[in-house]
Image (cartoon, rainbow, N blue to C red; front, top):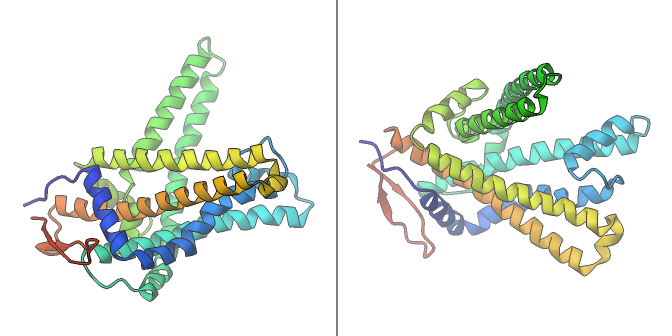
Length: 301
């Protein structure tokens, strides 16, 4: 017998219960791996001089290619790119592991979460590379198609149409692969296997997956844009002397950190429900912690 289809609100509620029950544990992981990335989204823009390029990723590429004769200036973006890729992988591995064990009422130890990074870092990296290659090839194909229709009579219409189709394909793939990182950590798979596994698990729950994708994606993009505009309007390092900028930096960084934490933990909770939906039960009952530290049992069959 399969379990009932979970709602988006249920996923968030159960995620909150798990995080609150192990608040100090998740706080430590958040401060160690998520907060530095969130904060760097603000301060890195202040370390770079061009004000016309707002995205820190674009700035990294800009300085990498334009300052090849200046080693210190070129080294900074390279270090930052390595930083924004390695720390999210560490947070994904440790928080996914902790949430999965916390859902079933198992002990959640900091040392074990750190060990999960050692076993999952390179599989997560390999899976990320596979995903990026597939998406890169798709984008390359669509860009080639755009170039073919560029000189046609209705070129603008076809370019917009192709752009919309490309966005649709990328969103579809994101929803299909939404649980791939959880599969890597929990089931010790990597490469193409987690992508296929995720596509199977999300069947029947596309509405919930799409809701989570839009919800978390919207806030991450919005907060990232606010962080970038904050630095641009603040006038770089000098603007940081203003208490308004300091306050907004704390608010934006804190919100982005919380959203990232709930996104990773929520994906893990969704993964467990997807397994139950497909009849893959780890036991007749699963336990969820609640805020008063009592452990009620929830029947999932």
